[in-house]
Image 1 (cartoon, rainbow over the protein chains, first blue to last red):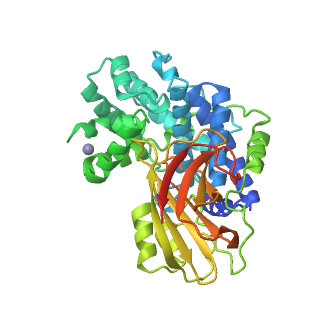
Image 2 (tube, rainbow over the protein chains, first blue to last red):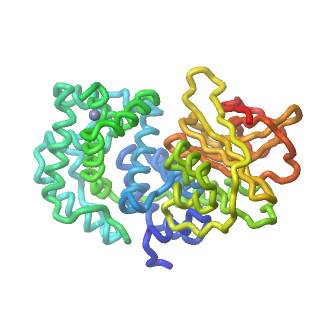
Image 3 (cartoon, chains in turn orange, purple):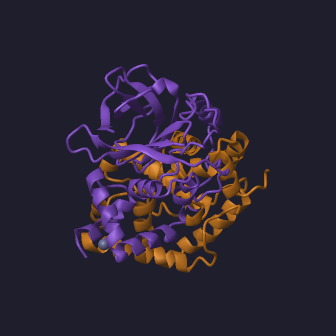
Length: 187
Length: 243
Ligand SMILES: [Zn+2]
């Protein structure tokens, strides 16, 4: 069962197969935690996010629809949503974001990461290098900080109406330099 | 292009109020530009989580998560399974085409497998074949002014037993440990008839067997409770309606 694809495990887990659920948990615990931590910069919040996301999957209040893309992409979206909601609930968003210069560029992680994650990361990281600093910053503020359009405009000193266009442009450029499409998946 | 088109980024980043969110979702259905831009944002950001550095997972995290899971009430199991063939309950998770579609489909032909056909695209175990008929229905209306919640309650009968199916949308957000409890009542005391939690989008569906202890009732209500299956409601009434 260790090599069973995500979709199958999810199907089993959603009919309360605990073993399948546990395999899915083990497969994604680290990625979900790391991503939540990347957004929240707070281990406690990241723990809460992991707990919330997996409990919701188990009790059926977060539902993956196989027709709508990879399980991993869905899981990471749910993770981001919860992490952003938590941040906003704690009102950390009301403070001027402390964005380190080039937060999007970080040191390569350890080799312990799952191979797929590591591979994907190397690819995106090299694509990030192709962006200019303003593009890196706007992706950081938009995607990882989850800031409102107004806050992004303030922070980047851009007219409100141009924020969406700048975000799209930066993302498109990033994507354009990534050859392989799609999220990591075991499917 | 209208003012909603300006809200795509804030929608994606969950910075809208619940009212604005509802309005934007309505707008999405009508604005091809916004819906394709939203899809584009989702696709373009798909790889970004993998930029995250590997963090050390706290040692007790898995144990905590599984402790919570083991403590979860199985919201569908408070009644013993009924004899005439146990129907896979409509879990909260199968709700997307929400009320109108589900209700219309149920009204139209009422074959058990409709549940699968309309609402479930995942590979669930097949539902046992039983022919349901709609015995009664009620629309539940919000009990607080300005609350956008609504729900439909259907009583389905296969000749020997009855099930109550409740499908709700725009539900208020629950706090940790809370759940929505369905009640049926007549002149007498209310009886709990199924509990559920809502999805992130505030929708939820539950089906509950109506054993002989239920007798006749004419009113259905939904409250927020800390515990399922209480002898009497303790929390606020969110929705109610009559058959
Ligand atoms: Zn629009």
